[in-house]
Length: 85
Image (tube, rainbow, N blue to C red):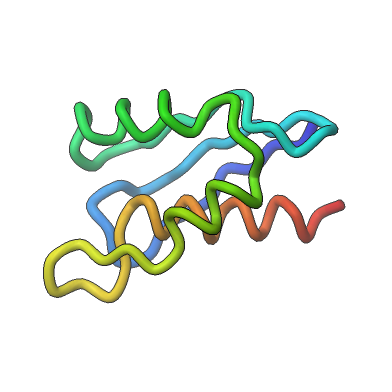
């Protein structure tokens, strides 16, 4: 199992807590701060998915005029988690 608590940048959420198993399948995602309902939805949608698939789908999503978003920051967290291997 791999785990990260990622400090976000440029979003309303402050931390993303992610756990991935040894097969790169996302087991848990928790967001601290941000739009609770939306982030619970994202968490449930990505749980059980392969890390690479989630990065491919969510990378580069922007929130309004911001350069990033919570889904995009989740990709940054997953990339850091992959780099820990």
